[in-house]
Structures are given as C-alpha cells and as structure tokens.
Image (tube, rainbow, N blue to C red; front, side, top):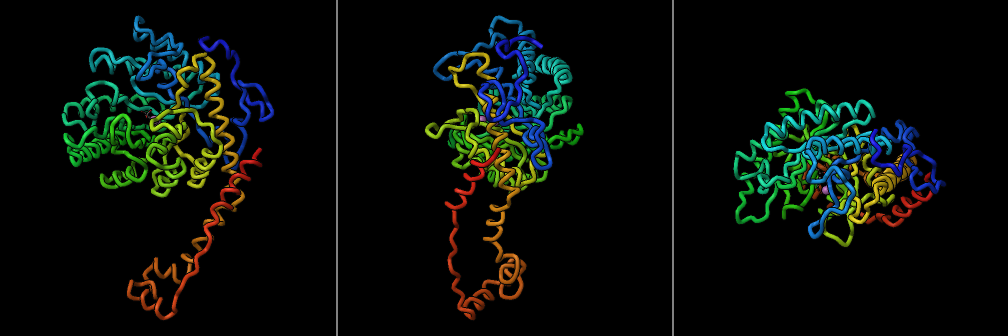
Length: 446
Ligand code: XLS
Ligand code: NI
Ligand code: NI
C-alpha cells in the first residue's frame, strides 16, 4: 500500500447515524442485511478511475488545480501510470468500496502507435490484476475512451471514414479483452462523439446503421471470447455533441430493437444524463425496467441551474430513494451496480476531499436503500398502484386485452358503450398523498 492519502491512515468504518466523525460511514454498513442481501451486495458500489485519478481539475477556462503528482508532464508515462494505480488502489481499499471502473486510457498511456497502446494496456492490466488480487477490489466495468483523441472528433463508430471505425473497433477489442481478463462484470459504451454537430454534413441514416453494426460486432465478440458480463449503452442526450444517438433509455430501446440487440444489451443510467435529457432519474430507471434493459447506474447529480454534466456527488436521499425503489422493484442489480461517475469541485484540492465526497455519496445510497426497501416491504405504494389498474384484470379490461366479447373491436366497444350508457367517473390520482407517504418512509428509516 502506498501512502498518498496520509491524512486518512485507517480504513473508513461504519459508526452509525449518531457519529460526528466526518471520515466514518453513518449509513453504509457493508454487511448489514436488508431483505435478502447485504448492503454491499445490493449497491455494488464502484469508484471511477477517470474523474478521481486522471482529471487534474482543469475546466474550459482554467488549469488543473488538484494535487495529482502522477499527472506531471515530465514523468516517464508507464512509471506515472503505476504510481497513479497504486494511489487509486490505496483509495479503493481505504474507502472499502467493492468495485472500480476505468477507461483504457485512464490506466495506460497511449504511446506513439497502436502496437504500443496495446502493449501498454496489457502490461498495466497485469499490474491491475495484482492490485485486485491483493485488495479484493473487483472491476464493475471497463470502457474504451473513444472520444478524446482528435481522430474521433467526428465519431468513432459513426465516423464518415471507415478507417476510424476500424481503429475504434480494434481499441474496443483490446479493452474488452482486458475487461474479460480482469473479471469485469460489464462492458460499457458511452457514445460521447456518436452524434452530430450539424445536420448539414451528417447522414443520419448511415450513422445509425454504422452504430448498429458496431454494437453487433461488440456483441459477437463478447460471445466469441466467452465474456459473461453485460454489454451496456450509456444514454446521454448531448454534450459534447449537439445531439447524441443514445439520447435516453427509450431511444436506446428503439435503437436496440431496430438492430436486433434488445436481448443482448442493457443501459447504464446516469443521474445527470437523465436530467440533461429532461427526465427524472426515476423516470429513466422505470423506463429501462419497463423495456427490460435496466443494467447499471452512474451515480451522481446535476445542478438545476446549469445545463451541463456537472457530475456532482449524489446527496439527495429523496432522489436516490426513488431511484433505488425502481431498481428493487425490477428485482435489483444482477451484474450492474452504482458507479460514482462523480467529480470533486475544482476547489476541493485537499487529498482527503476525495474521501469526504465518496463517503457522502455512499451514505446517501445506503440510506436510500433502506428507504426504498421499507417502501417495497410495506407494500402500500405497490398496493395503491395495482389498485388503480384492477379493472384490467377481469371483466371489460381483460376482454379488451384478449379481444373477447365487448372488447373484440372498436365496433363491439361502440355497441357496449351505447347499450350500457357507460359514463366512467374520474378517480383521484392522489399524488400529494403519495408524495407525503414517501416522505414518511424517509423520516422513519433507521
Ligand atoms: C460522460 C460519461 C462518461 C462515461 C464513461 O458524460 O458519463 O464518464 O460514464 O465513458
Ligand atoms: Ni457516466
Ligand atoms: Ni456523464
């Protein structure tokens, strides 16, 4: 273990809600059993390599502010990558988080040729395997960075030049191989450049076909190497491009169906991407679950006043409780989990700020799990929901669904309404009462 995070000498421990120790968990008690599983098993939380260890704290107007010595320009790149990795695993281990996630280029320098890029990644993957073995930290997912290099400025799979497609495919193959080798639970594709800046130079129909072809090749390769993880698309409506094809869960589902992949690929829902697409986090999860493609989550939060991906740490128990509720209703995660795709604010430059941020996020999710579980156990919300649709189970509703009796056609329904002088009475949706109920669960959870 290195000693980069010297101000946090001990692993972070659970001390309970009454604790005032800022470096202790107040809600996340990894082994606490909630329903059928422990908190750790339900939440399957991960730290992301990129924002936490690879981002120097720069923004479009200013330079890096963070203390990340391994990012200094004059270091030997492989040595710097090893130092970064040691600090990252020191952090994962002290935080007690079960998983991490990475992009190929976060962990390995790209070098000056494809051969060098491949060799670097494979060599550093060997080092990662050793760290993983030593710490017991697992890989939630790997992904290839297909949006940073200038060659990808006009897209990777959707580039007008097939040579760029080929280069991206080769990079993804490398990254899938490494993800597979490290026991990754999923493989993610976020199409940061798979969209357009202007329709004046874009052939939408071709680009969608290219993206469909690419994803089919990814799925074929997954089966070819016997990777048992899940392939995940990460929806985002825009940023960096004006429009991204994987706009939201519902458009991803339509895309997957069009290219015959709806049983092969799921989605990785990011809170801030949901809000950028004009939806609640809860909506994106519920829609993905309804379409049978709910895979994993990038946990973070946006800022209501800002129209970009601020990637702040989640801190709203209400927002997360509604999200976890949808996940539990759908049966919980299988290969998925909660990855903190989160960035410190640029002024949070102390080394232990990374601990405070993740502890807050993990506690928020743990408390939200307790709320969501208690709402589901109690059954009051589910009872109210199913009660609203009771009419579809028998009689007229069942006849409509199955094409029987008065439900057979528009004509027979016309007769039925005429004969019975049907005049259904509206029933209250009781939204405010339900919202109060959710608040009651939040208040009571312990
Ligand atoms: C960017 C995305 C990115 C993906 C991984 O907005 O959230 O970080 O999660 O490429
Ligand atoms: Ni993300
Ligand atoms: Ni994002």
